[in-house]
Length: 257
Ligand code: PGA
Image (tube, rainbow, N blue to C red; front, side, top):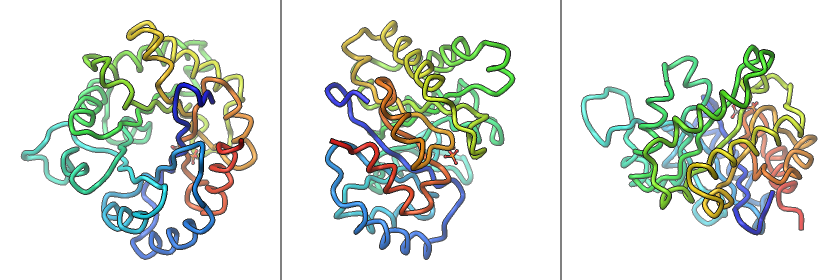
């Protein structure tokens, strides 16, 4: 973390979990435990059907609500899809773009990720852009090249003036939901690479303001060490964000004085 230049953001990614009833119960449990974190922003990315309720439930708290994906057009014949403008109008602040599960199961490509990043920014949402290598790529020794490529693709055509709204999440695919976390050194190396790519594209002043998260089996035990790395400015948390007490512990790790 480097709080001087950029915000630390702890974001939950609920994926396809929690009904409306469970969302209400979660909010009731989380709110009193969370208090008012001074040093970090807290985000919960929830299933689309729960967005409106989540916004209402967390209205008087420090928690911002995010969506888990969006379309790149603002309206049209795209049955089942949700436009960034619709999310913005609801009061949604963030949207996850290009999560590896979306890339793997729903044909998201670097091209559609780029379109979605631009559309989200245009609508006034903050994209949380996910990048990450497979185990095969790590074993082949091409991780940094691959991440560089993904970051460049995601940012093609994004103006420097929009960059302070962009969040990156480095999520090695082999660490997602597996209980196998990247070491702090591995995560730090890739997050530093992401910042270097941004620096080359936009200059040092822009690069130092961009929040870069780590995601992949982050939990109350490993959060503090990961967050102690200078280029890791928070976490995108799947499994551990479904349990209020674990999520709060991670927020607390990011919120140490
Ligand atoms: P995990 O998921 O924390 O359950 O590994 C992270 C993510 O997919 O964003």
